[in-house]
Image (cartoon, rainbow, N blue to C red; front, side, top):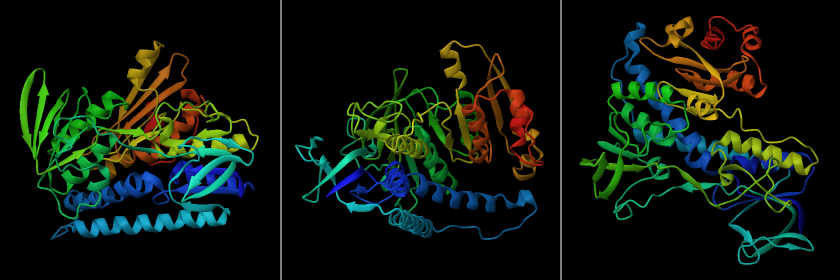
Length: 437
């Protein structure tokens, strides 16, 4: 049987592409070797946010006296937190299955490869795909096979019982101490979760600041907040070797040994297919084959994958929308939250453009003060010389929701006076963006 479109990988890019294609009348088949939803739903975005929300409620209960409330016998059950996470994942997977059925997408569970030594080959019937010993053909193909956890060549690591973000999500017992190798988004979110529940957390990061890619000033402010809560950071530090529960680190030529009951490796992710190049419509060198999501290495975020998938399917449907990466929001779901979109100050400096900085503490927002007793935060805006908004970076709840406002402004090329002309409701934390302009 020949399909109009075959999609390999059922994560955010894959299931989005399948739904859009199916609803537009394309005969579509989607291959997924594990579970629909990909890394994001099964072992990434959704599971971690579910755990973090439980931790946030636990922390709020402990802080209730600040708000005139009295809550006694505050405790948590990690096994029930994990069980709730699993229930939510199952529910959302069922939702994706329903979407595929509604869009008349055929879902095939199994590993799909090219029919000739794993290579994609054009035949009379289309592109040949082998899955479960059955050959499928498609006129067009979208690769959405995602990424995997990067495992750096640290001596002794492979002989050590370490965890990645996949295994740590199933912890039914709270580790007494946790050493996290890597201070990126995943590492810092897990640091927040375990620290909130009482684990002694240490983070080792090779660079001079956590959250590489985020605005450094905002990242440093978050690190200061997390340090107050008891998380220990070692920056500019290399993990030289690992042996059982001992981690040997080096900084400026000096060596030190740390110990932890559990090690979490969070050294980033890498695409499952290397050196894959795509154009602005997500086409590879073969115009009949597209690639979307983590596999492109452009922006390993679920919302980026969704947009890339829409661009790819719309292009093969005859539309000419091009992929833009200038306003891709990044969010860190810590307590407090961090979010940024557009240029960071460091990126603006490296580009050589003339820019200015405007910023205000989050405490300028009455709503923020009312809901974040003793809380700190910052709204930082980067402007071009003509007033065009180039970047917005936030520390403080609910940064993950507010960053959408900034993303729209940057994508549309709005100037400060244009955004300031918009009426923001009062009292809202979002007013801080308008007040900062």
